[in-house]
Amino acid sequence: MSYSGERDNFAPHMALVPMVIEQTSRGERSFDIYSRLLKERVIFLTGQVEDHMANLIVAQMLFLEAENPEKDIYLYINSPGGVITAGMSIYDTMQFIKPDVSTICMGQAASMGAFLLTAGAKGKRFCLPNSRVMIHQPLGGYQGQATDIEIHAREILKVKGRNE
Image (cartoon, rainbow, N blue to C red; front, side, top):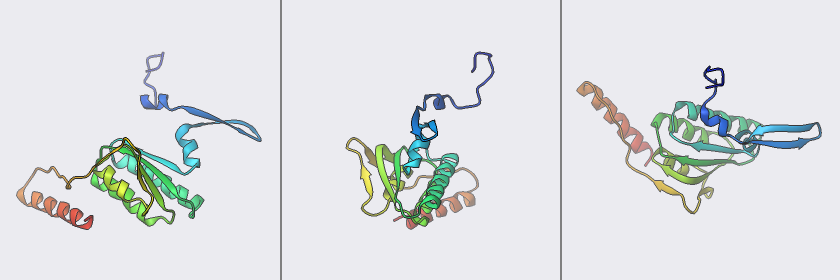
């Protein structure tokens, strides 16, 4: 809420994002910390893996590939997991783009977060000393007609088989 009582147009957590100031030949320029780190080819995957977050990460990876397809991308992960299809869009992009993606676990990489940690380039997958990784069998909650549940179960088994 603003002082006038109107709702602000940004998420409350965005007010906590630090700004960094860079000196350039044209003067000073300020960036939010995540934009500045993106210039260094660093992407953060934090929180639940869901469609909106996955789209942002995919877009950042595609942008960095277009900027320089030869330089590695660094994906920092702190995630409890999330939606399989959203995570698979990130995974597929990591495998599709030319630059190697180095994955670094900070905090936790659980469920889909752990799967994405393992999707980093061979020899470029890391865990910080106090991080935790948790992998489990695919889960699916579904209700409905028996035939719909059977179709959903077959789909989960197909995803599980593809990722073994």
